[in-house]
Length: 253
Image 1 (cartoon, one colour):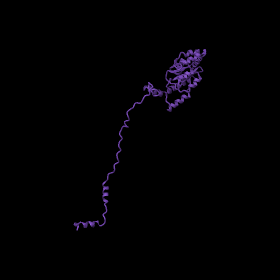
Image 2 (cartoon, rainbow, N blue to C red):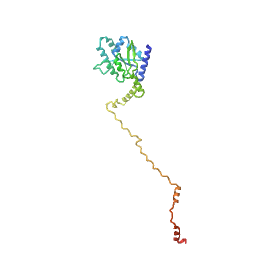
Image 3 (spheres, rainbow, N blue to C red):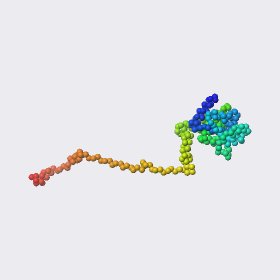
Image 4 (tube, rainbow, N blue to C red):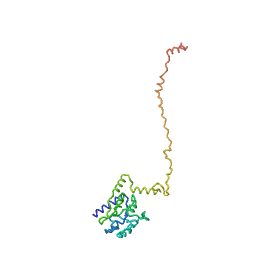
């Protein structure tokens, strides 16, 4: 059974690497419910997670998750001690803490740009995360850690990218880096907030060419045969014209 789970994890991690650009060390965002389940089932998170995912990991949490454990019962004191050992990532709720589920959702956002794995036992949070493409989920079942299967939303997103309907995360990141090199933001403005104007370039050289005049059609030259034909058509003289001409000329008599 352990070998089967290991193969499933390897296949799923490879899918996220290829389609969503996940890279080592994998960032595991953990809440108090996961730590409580690990403590209850005697699971060493730091030791077993790298072996299960077959790669380096960074275990992290948020200040909201820690504050939530402090407000709950004393039974979760051990989970709080475990969670305090992980890196604390900055969230948007430093002044006004929110529930851990809401905080983790805000950390993931709409596209999970930081490539977080989410480790939680919260079912409501799991349902919400499955609606976001590219979010691997970890939970504990029967004294073992399990990497959840690919969600339908994730599979549909990858199919849309393969059909050319959406851009993959790698394409989006390459476009963003090109914009940053040019000093442009997402709305087309530069670092100062002003939109860049297009430089007026030289006119198209093809449009500056003079139009060629069309040659006039030449009339065909007249041949000698046509001239001869026209010379044959003489005016007819009236009857008796030759006799009158001879009589008027005295030299012919």
